[in-house]
Image 1 (cartoon, one colour):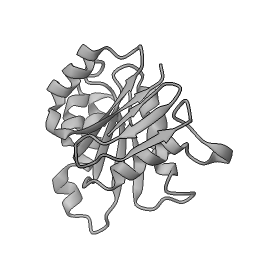
Image 2 (cartoon, helix red, strand yellow):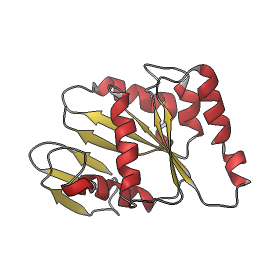
Image 3 (cartoon, rainbow, N blue to C red):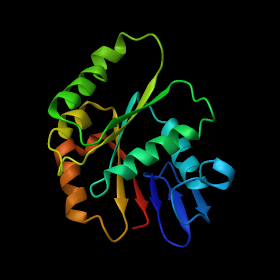
Length: 176
């Protein structure tokens, strides 16, 4: 899945089987009319929701607060009282906090739960906070948030190398 920014935005599949294209007239991620999530956020959420994951990390190489904002917007797509989705803030986290979150979201710990909770984690870039690597490798899936004209391609590639490209299920390109 890739969300591209600009005057006209497009959401498109990450592989040949997922060829849906949705043209969006919204120029930025955020809320649409009267507090509803923007169409771009809804399109991203429905693509993500269809995939098999219990823990999803959002990581932005440049601006971590964008990951936190997007995590809340994705959760808001489910409505006023989203059930089964928890948002976790791991931005600017200490070694101890990252260790606690990693332990709580470990596959072994989640297997013992009978509910089907899903967790969206806003995480620091491992280039900024190296302790985030452990958290990102614990998550089932990772989405990279790229900012137009701000995110350097070598930085994005390095994050893919550090975390493991097999964990990444997509990227979102936001206006810079």
